Image (cartoon, rainbow, N blue to C red):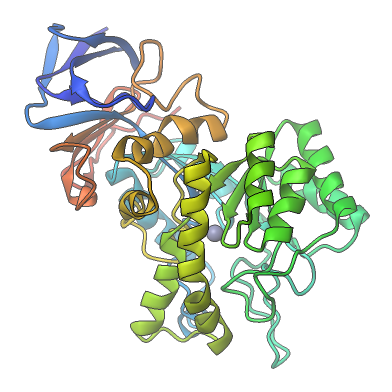
Length: 414
Ligand SMILES: [Zn+2]
């Protein structure tokens, strides 16, 4: 029943309000009080720091560690699970205590975190991405070989589907396998060599079945959607979030505002593909060309959506780029017109709302779970964030300090 008080710092509570000096008291894993001059049984000196709620990354791939095709061909199947352990630790050490895995992680990965077997953020998993033949999830190459980024295995169903019946069956297989959220590609993408990001994928009849099954199971749908027609088809079908949103037009933005659809920009993703190529990663020529083509358009689209007031949740596509750089997305969002407060809101309460967990997480308010991040310095400075995470608490317990996960029994089995 120890009451721990974080004193001497300022609080940015995640609601979008600016930071202000205050203390935060936590007890039994919950925030119990936020305000000036609090006392308790233990205190954590937060002088020179800002207290934030546990951060969110609404689009990661913890089972992916880069996009180098030749490296993937030389990586043993089970190696990816050990890489995921490392990726989860790096993510948690950044203060990211909740993620949505947009494909790759299966129930075993999520359950290992949930049981406290390995350290990591709270996870919602999509397991794999529903994609049409020739779509973003189809790993077919012109040589005749298949090399999907997230190939099927016993915990991860095959998710290349065509037609409403296949869609319905595969959605049910994903739910059976433990999906907390469903991911669909309603347009082509950058990393898939044989499609065009501007083309819409799946027809309305297929997307309607997907959303119908998702609603029946009480889960949300996220859409990898880059071209305007694919974005609009997703929004019209009732999909909850648009991932990437590279070619947003005015009609798409209006529809998103009307329907309350979130945008998860992943501004880091095209940059990560280009950085990998520059560092010598082997990638199909078409992929590099597409990444180069989309980056400026993507930034302009996201800026337009931010200016129009579309709801945004922070997501990085980490896995395409390295895990551990996630917080650089905040300054990229600021470059597209967000104030620092808006960028933090996208990384906290707005993302919690998207994930349907805002009742428990996303802001430092009495009654919520005590996921607390101690950030060195002022939160209006978005530079060098990953080196400024002093401490990370989950449910009131210290889980990371100085950029590293704290070991030995601090993550209780649950
Ligand atoms: Zn992704």
